[in-house]
Length: 382
Image (spheres, rainbow, N blue to C red):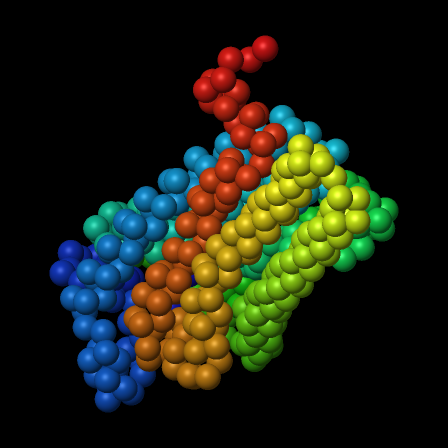
């Protein structure tokens, strides 16, 4: 995910595998760039700053990922017990599985980078190999999470806009097929990475061993193909999913507010025409208040889920736009250190979002809370 190899690397061993150094994280800097540009890049983020920030971010990331793995394991277990007769349970289960897988992939990448930092000698170049076995899959699976969230927002929006037709439009089978299509179109293209990069066995004369490494395929087709699919799957699809979530959430909140105001006005008009007795009026007001609270809970639930996604995804959107605007702000550009650190920091939003979702379900979904409490034995099973 973070390293750049060249054809020269097929015969030249990596220093991280041969000798102990004080700054192993920046051993993969691209020294083929102009020296003046490299000096400018180092001035923005020095070796020491790069090491400290990246190490701190890796440990922070792993702590959050551990929480995400545990939280989403419980989410999947609860949704399985609830069953899949409700379409929302299917989409939320798919979301939890993707969040769990993202946390596992990030854990693998963190481990590989730490092995590189501490110069642990393995039969493969840990940091380079993590690019093809973890980093690429993580980036594409993040798109899957974004589009599943967009589908959930769209589904809930339909529940408010066309409540009488939504049960016929979105059934459990339709939701299941939609999840498969989203995974097929957003995650499976991650294997296009193998068109641009490949595994090779590299002999290390210093250690007298052969190790597994990765090198880029520098054919014209592979380079052009990489640019196209990165632009489509790395820029267009994430920003489009983000837009869908924002639009659907705004429509949902506005429509819920309209329905709440309409019901309040109708109830008030009926009370004035009927002129009920004092006790009846009190009863009606209680019912009115109950309706209002129920709708408020629904609004808060939808807004909370969408807000967590939006807040966690905004840094990623900004980084994607910077990647488009600034040519050297990418994995293989002069400012790769800044890009790596920025990427790691923005990636923290995903495990945070995956960890917090369970709290929203627990607080705002009575069935989920009941099953969860029985699952962890907080309540006695009848």
